[in-house]
Image (cartoon, rainbow over all chains, first blue to last red; front, side, top):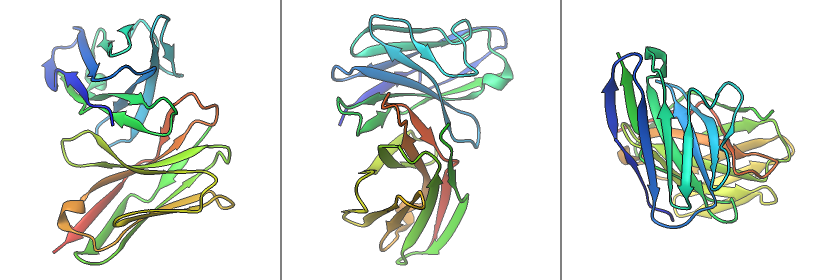
Amino acid sequence: SAVISQKPSRDICQRGTSLTIQCQVDSQVTMMFWYRQQPGQSLTLIATANQGSEATYESGFVIDKFPISRPNLTFSTLTVSNMSPEDSSIYLCSVDSSSYNEQFFGPGTRLTVL
Amino acid sequence: GEDVEQSLFLSVREGDSSVINCTYTDSSSTYLYWYKQEPGAGLQLLTYIFSNMDMKQDQRLTVLLNKKDKHLSLRIADTQTGDSAIYFCAAGDSSNTGKLIFGQGTTLQVKP
């Protein structure tokens, strides 16, 4: 299984600021995904991070609000821009195995926006 | 699009079996997954099943898949207090992009 780390593990931010979350994997992976888990809710996919190309965003999520970088096969960042209290959530990155039949998650970044 | 549904809460006594149920709508989902989330933690992949299988067993965990009814279940034998967590069912996107569609999660409470 892949070992995934995220930084920061948690943060408290002020309204209107931005936060960049890092996701590091211990092996090269093709696909990386960013999910959001709002308080007491399930997980919703924000975007798929592709190495060497633009991220693919799901309906309801836009690049201006959640810019993503994927500079290599082991690393990705998600920025939450111009934050509001509604952005308070856990943000999780995940990676797939080469055959898509196993997908592993990082520990998550718990974000609180005041 | 795919929709995944779970019951929200299950309470069992320690030593009993737990059965967590899940239904999904897209019959072409290739893989179906069970994840466990403990308080304050990320998601732990428990097991998954390929859509051409009916059953998969892994130690105390048994996954049953009824593809006709689009029903998935996770049975935990000899449930322990350490099994208390939220359990998420997820369906792999049928277009095989690696995307997962999650259910709402079932909170399992294990009473001593």
